[in-house]
Length: 303
Image (cartoon, rainbow, N blue to C red; front, side, top):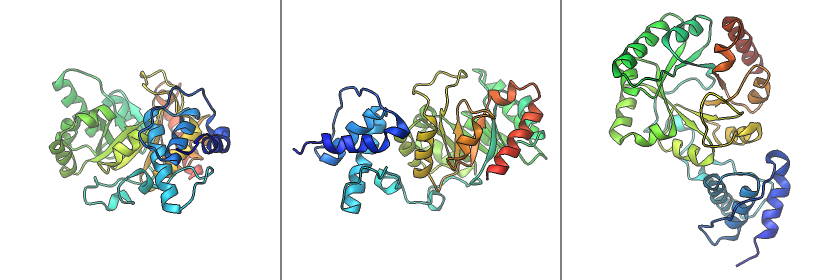
């Protein structure tokens, strides 16, 4: 087998300035191809977890086969090299209903009262993230949120509660990876047949590739920065990774999420994502309506 160390060192040297480096754990290889092995070692040295390094290594191998050469500087960003479906995703036969490429300011909110408040403040995309074990309370809150956005022009996504979202006539539903995995094929068909838009959370390459298999309406990427709102299984992704993700997912509406505020927003938008999701930056603001206006203006100026 060829020595993989020189190619791995070339990749690290070319991209360490963007991603930084760590001491990698022992690397498990699933192929003997030298480009694959060099890329996996390099990507783990650049701080990617095993599942994401595996995706990148396979993509780098596919890219080298497609182009006929190895290029350490060419970070993979062709969907086909990752085994993803045909692009644009909206043209696929199994695609969910489309939503705008740029969803703008995306407010993630705890209840219907907040949903109505931010919709009336001009936030173009809102999500109800209502946590309860009471099915009746969930149904009432989802219905109230749908009613709260009437006449505002805001697009309402319901986090997790897709059955209630269908029943209430919401614009769309947002699912995390575990929620997506828990759905049966018939459940996905029900959501699609109801005309709901589907957004999916992702936290790296492996989850983006998984999300792509269901051809959602948009893909959310995060957490970009540290967040105290929920326990994250993965470390903050950072703007450099967000930029790489956005390049791979061009063709999808993209939402960045996690620790974003007014100060961090310009760097996020510079990656080309069409939407930034915010929670605390709005609900913890002294004047949420004024903050919404400020953030809307910043996003409009950037786009």
